[in-house]
Length: 249
Ligand code: ATP
Ligand code: MG
Image 1 (tube, helix red, strand yellow):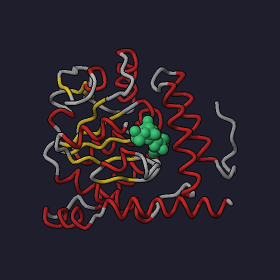
Image 2 (tube, helix red, strand yellow):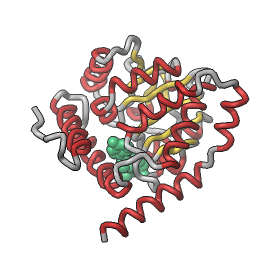
Image 3 (tube, helix red, strand yellow):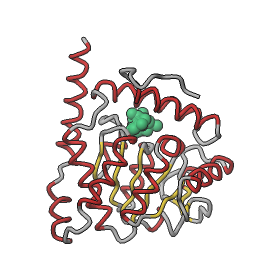
Image 4 (spheres, rainbow, N blue to C red):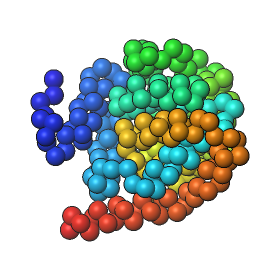
């Protein structure tokens, strides 16, 4: 197994990397997923590998959206499945959302491996294998969704989504909650709520806020949603990253 002492200053980061490696070995994560992880790590390093205040506000707004939703769906790809499967299952329970496997590089084998992996982490019903719905304006393989899952969701959480699909989901009128460490990524730019944070920290943080807001009235939830400013959040994240660059220089 992994041989990193807990006292190592970058223990969390190395553990995360190891989970992705394991994901590739298990056939859950794609090789492109390794590259995405490397990009994410660089941004996280500059952010100080912490949840910023504005990312925390975004997580709270995301929780409010999920609680207000008629049909919330959490989209799961190969990176997220490797990094935080149990945490996703828990969030789905707390906000009563569906889990749907949705892959940029879709293969039947990887779809099944991820569904099985989520079941091992406590998921009961996992969507994604039916693939009887389509996202308009996206090429065939990448457009596939379940009609009774993402296809008919009003609120979707898409961690590490690709820019094209993020844009197309937005165009379908869905409230889109994106987790992405790069505030300049198109996915983050088109999101209703961009959470610029490592998915490993962001998902449990959304769950924590959802628990905290569980007894809030619809009006209180709407207030949280309306107080959130996506552009200000992205600008703040960019500032934090630029600050990290200055510190390193
Ligand atoms: P686009 O502008 O089309 O979105 P991109 O360069 O962002 O292009 P993606 O395939 O979406 O291409 O890249 C993966 C994204 O996921 C990167 O922005 C990266 O920072 C982010 N990412 C990788 N690992 C994590 C993680 N653990 N938590 C959050 N974000 C991550
Ligand atoms: Mg992106």
